[in-house]
Each structure stands twice: as C-alpha cells, then as structure tokens.
Image (cartoon, rainbow, N blue to C red; front, top):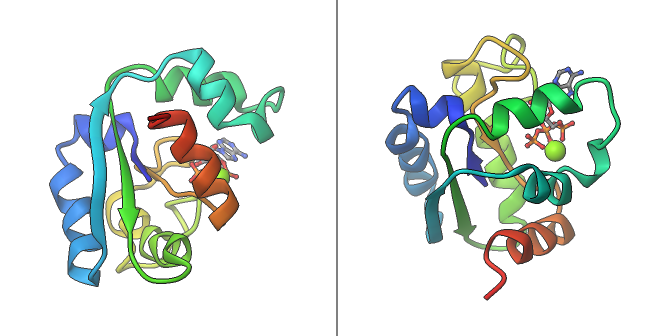
Length: 129
Ligand code: ATP
Ligand code: MG
C-alpha cells in the first residue's frame, strides 16, 4: 500500500497505519520516498494514456509518499482495500480511510494493490531486493 502525498502532507500516516495495525495486519517494510515518473509509469501501467494519468503522476510525485508492505493472512490485499474504501472519497463509506479523511477523487490518500498478483508485481517495483 501507499500513503499518497496528500496523506503525508496532512499528517495522516500514523492514523492510516494504525487502522491496519488495529485490524491485526503487520507492517513488513516501509519507507518515505518521493516517487518519480518512471516508477509511477510502472506502478500505474494500466492507467498510462488515460485522461487522468498526467494529473495522477503530478499528484503522486509532488512530495514524498509512504510506501509500505502490509502482511497478514490470505488475501490481505482485500482487507486493506476494504479498510481504504472506494476510489472516490466523496462516496466512500464512513469508517473507511477514504470515507473518513477524503473528499476528492485524485487526492484519495491511499493506494492498495487490487489482487495478490498486483501486490507481488508492485512489491517488486518498490522493494526489488
Ligand atoms: P489505487 O490504484 O490508487 O489504489 P484504485 O485502485 O481505487 O486506486 P484505480 O482505478 O486503480 O483506483 O485508479 C488509480 C488512481 O487514479 C485512483 O486512486 C485515483 O487517484 C485516480 N483516478 C482513477 N480514476 C480517476 C478518474 N476518473 N478521474 C480522476 N482520477 C482518477
Ligand atoms: Mg488501482
């Protein structure tokens, strides 16, 4: 998962991580890191060329993000996504990270891998070792 630049800027990294910890998930790796456009093109491969892509990259690279590997039981990716809430914070339910802390589509605070395969692919991008 990634705490996006808006989450870091607003001081919500602790708040977000504590939700995963309260759920019983573990933080296996983590680093504060400014993401460059090459890394983001790999990470957001499926979105390259879409209408919102340039805005997405500008946002994701504007200040440091907090990149983390979250560990837990089978299908932890799905638990993380449930805690995050739907993509658009305006309609994400209260009780979720996006529902409680966000209001805008682009600045939606967090990224979570959307499958076990995506998690494996993304971990290899951010923590190749
Ligand atoms: P993420 O991949 O960041 O976890 P997601 O899986 O919920 O979010 P995706 O469809 O993968 O959503 O979109 C990636 C990101 O691109 C979104 O988190 C959002 O910031 C941005 N985005 C997606 N769709 C739009 C859109 N229609 N307009 C503006 N921004 C968008
Ligand atoms: Mg996605």
